[in-house]
Each structure stands twice: as structure tokens, then as C-alpha cells.
Length: 153
Length: 373
Figure 1 (cartoon, rainbow over the protein chains, first blue to last red):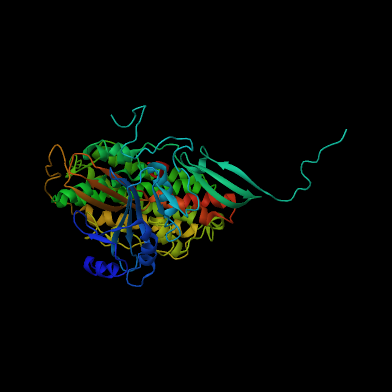
Figure 2: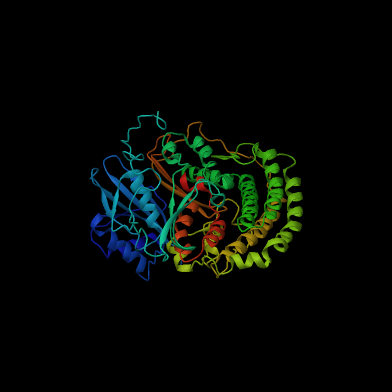
């Protein structure tokens, strides 16, 4: 499906979505956190979208907000889509886990938790993946202070 | 004196063992925490991070030319393809017109890299299941490719031959002849691989029907590369999202439907044949021209987001760049193939034996720095 057709279809499911194709090769959807899981489920199941392949899941620190970016592709229809979700709560950021929809999300969400401190509700095994359990802070956040000064100068 | 009974019976019970981080079959510093009952695996939990270098954080500090160097150190067996991924992302963002010569050379070197990687994999695959001889044959042929790389790129493993805009240097005058020599040589050696290992009864007993991954699970777990294709999932980035010169060569995507360890083995063997064919199609037709187009000394990507996929020897590598218009990326994420392929290990290893786990892991072809980044 083209970007326009996707936008028309997905826009009819939920009211609160924001669409943009600027500054990106994909159609981008900004979804409120409370609708994230329902939207993802629908994108995976709907016969016209069938986004069965989550090929990238990235945490991003946008400065004010923290967010997660989901890159989706359909292996049958070969169209692609980007879904973004944001939260302004830097103390206790939390989104619904999509690991029940795509199994690959389980590891990717653990990585995001490890480096950004974003929690995922209903995740089967949410704990640090790369860093040790007693590590303080979340290194890929922009405000992370690295006392040893090993990475950023 | 009364004795205390600590265990009342010797029924089977689950216990943990550590496999790694120094286990020979993990090919790097990966630790697997196995829950086993006798010899049957109940759960595999990977423990990662032994060589995490925070490459993504370093990228936020570095210029785009510097980032290319870091990618060598992720999947070091596909170093050139990793370099290419970042260069393509930057070139697409800058909308640079890349000379045909560059595209063809990148494709040839990419395919040679894939063969070299698969040679190493084939050697250690045999070794993991107890056939030590394969190691020497695999390394013998890989050595020829390394020598070609050394002559043209100046390095054998971490080539760093790509720069945003093209290639660092033009190819060495000997390049074409040596590649042709290698292709002729390797065509006589690949059938030997089959005679030595593929048809071996012991090898087949260790691999057929072991570690089966269904097509649906392959997609759900984000499997890519030979792991996905052995489950009948057509996921070759070179076919579906062609880059460089892959749109002008003909090759067959190696697909099988069994999804077991043996199918993953056969897919990689077939991929070596296909890679030879791609190299043959291009080696006599390298267009004349520049090996590089000029870029600004300080590269600033326009504000926006860029995503580039490539097919490394292990599967789909994604480079996701968020730029705010400065000389560094605001955020750079590597979607590495090994990371997703590792995540399905628990799924396919449970219920099997520890020996099967070794064979299964060998065909996932994990490179730990690629997972740890």
C-alpha cells in the first residue's frame, strides 16, 4: 500500500494519531501511549496491513521526552511503516510491551530498558541485558553523566 | 549420632550450568545460562555484555567518517558490508550520485566478504560437531580472500575500504586477476566441502531435524539471513531492497523449508555458490571512472531520519540515523542480525540435548561483537 492509502486506513481506526512523511523515507505515526498496544495488534492482524515483521525497535532520548521507535514491514505486502511513541515522564517512563505481538521485541525491549530506563508493562522478563544489575543510570540518555569520562569528552 | 537426611531420593531435578563465556562453541564471550534436566535443555538464557563497547553512544560523538571505522568492530566477519551500510545511509541522506564503478566494486568485495565469512563458519561448524579437518580447509580458502583484501584495502579483516562518497582508494592492479584465480580455485574446492562434510552420515545425524524453526516463528523473532531463509522465509535484502549493484546481477535466493540445522547449513553452502556467480558476473565488467566523489570534509546530514538495510553474511543489518543537521548523528541505532538471531535460540533449543545446542548455535553463526556492539 502507498503512504496515502496506509494513512487513510490506519487513521480510520484511531482518532488521536499524527501522521507525517517529512524528513523520513517512511510514513511515521505518532501514537499516544494508551493506544500503542491496540494499534500494534491491529497493524499485525488486519488483512490489509499485515505488519508481521518488526525489524527495528529503538529507544530515543529526544531531550524533553523519551520515546520508542518501531520499524515495521509486511513480509507479504512489502510495505513499511514507522510507529513512534513518546512520554514526557523521565522519572518513570512506561509503555506497553509488544513482545506478545512480535517475539523479537522481548530482547529489543530489554535493550531499551537497559540503556534508556524505559519500562515495558507485561514484558515477560524485563531486566538489564548488557549491563550489570547494579549499574546506575541509563547510558544512552542524553543527560547521563559518565564520571569515568570514557565515552563522551 | 544422628545423621541428617539432606536428599531423600535421587529423582531427576533441574539444575543450572554455565556455558561460556569461555566455551569454545560460543565463538566469543557469550555466556549461556542453561537450565537442564539430565541432558535435556529446559531453558537457555543468554547473558550478554562481556564486550559491549557502547558503539551507539560513541557514534553520537563522532563524525560520519569516523563512524564507518567503528562498524568494522561489530560483525568483524562482514566488516566491509557494515562499512557499506553506513556509507549508503549517509550517501542517500546527502543525495550523492555514486559512480557505477564504486557500486560494482562494493558488490564484488561484499560478496567476497560473504564467502570468507561462510568459509570460516563452515570450518568451525565442522569443528563444533567434532570434524576438526574442516577448520583447516575453511581457513585455507578464506586466506586467499584475506590476501586479496590486504592488497586492495590494506587490511585483512577490518578493511575500512568504504568512505562516504565511494572508496578510499582505487582497486589494486592485481585485483581482477587474483579474484578470478580465487573463483576458479574455489569452484573446485566447494564440491570438496560437500564430499567431506555435507554427506557425512555422522554429521547428518547431528544436524537433520535438530533445532527446527518454523517460518512463522522466524518472522516473529525477526530472524534474517540464512537462519530465516532455511525456514522458507524469503528475507534477502539484496532481493527485496537492492542496493549497490545487486539490481543488475542475477542470483537465486537460497531458500529451504525444513528450518532445521541441516537446512541452515545447506543454505550457506548454496549462498557461497551464488556469491561466486555474482562475482563472476561483475568482475569482467567493472566500469571505468572515479572511485570516489567529493564530499565536504565535515559532513552534515540534513535534519531528518534515515534508514538503510543491507544483507551481511549473518542477515539484515539496519542503520537508523536521526540527524538534527549537525556533524554528528543525534542518535544512531544498529539493528544487528545476530541480536535477533540469538533471541530465538531459547525457542529452538528447548527440549534438545546440550550437544544439539552446540550444533544449533553453530548454524546461527553468531558473532558476539555484533550482538554486544
